Image 1 (tube, rainbow, N blue to C red):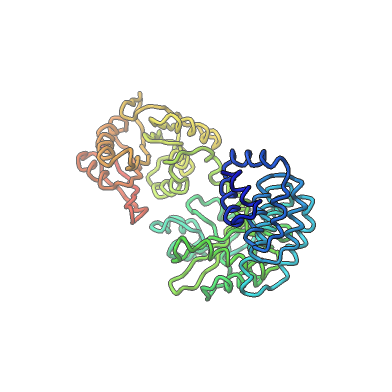
Image 2: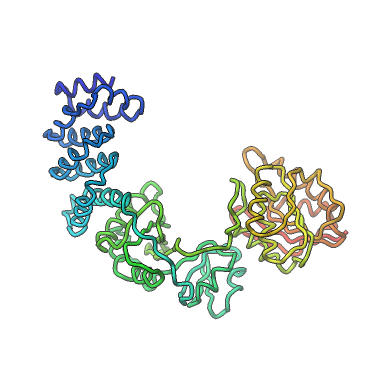
Length: 495
């Protein structure tokens, strides 16, 4: 079909439609090779179409030429790009050039990027101008990535917000002086505290810097971008880093906006932000140094906060290996923190469903154990647990075995574990049976006075198991997720 499409194009027969069909067919790599063989290096017919009166013909001809990956076409495409006056077509020339080694054109592309940043187009042309800027920026970054900036603000006394478990905010708040802490709905605010005193805390998820005094009243993306560019954000970032702009960023939007509309909304914010700041910021999908997080409040206004990826967060550096079902290290650290009053130093510990070892490692960080055993039927998880434990510099004995077939020569002081969850492959009936078998078998592995720390997304199964085992008594329980009822149980065992 590609030969037929091309012959019709050369004959001037319904040129636009046949170019579109040809371009679509060339998405197949085999068809692209066949077309290149057909042309045998003669691109005259397509090059002539770059001067066609129909802009959509020029657009599709340029994109097809780009697919040919011939470096001889670079000056042809670049000259056509410079001459092109139809705004919606100009980005397509850049798309075509991106298929080639366009480095010889880089100085001219950088100059064009600088010119576009200085112009303020008519409203009807803004969308296409912004798309052209984004592509030019990508092209420049491919060959001249900006220098990474080093975070140097570890001893600066800043107010930060820590996102934490909503149900157990106090577990993190209690690790700071009371006068410094304010509880928020989804986290805690720490007032004017050096970052080096915050980073070791293991129970928070994200560390965010609020942009002080910058509640954004408008829901218009262009206005949001202008407010972000007013200097406060740049001042914060420069205060905490070595080096000069530009800084690479991304935007995360937490709002009631429909998911299918968020992408366009964010792009409009970014376009306005970068236009207003004249190249101080680069929006990128990878390698970003900070995330601008916009949190929509109940009244419709936005609260801007910043998350820095330049900060060295070494809390969970041991977590090199994981599986899809692996427990979050923050959740494991929180569980160990909540259960800490019941953890015995130099205890002998067993995790019957250990996965990649996260719960045992975090338990050992909370209170040093003497001997630790991890059991799991999933051999890959056991191997990954050994890697993680080695990085953590700990000694844990891992065994690839079914817990219910496990015996040991001496009893344990403690069982700590996260129970397997209900999945499509493991229905609720099987999980219930697992809980029942667990309580039947666990007692045989524990000392006469022991403790069990159980992290469960099926708390009713835990309570049912305790009812059948009078030697077990709930000392304390902590709800970790009200929606799915995930609960941490501290259970005293007295035989």
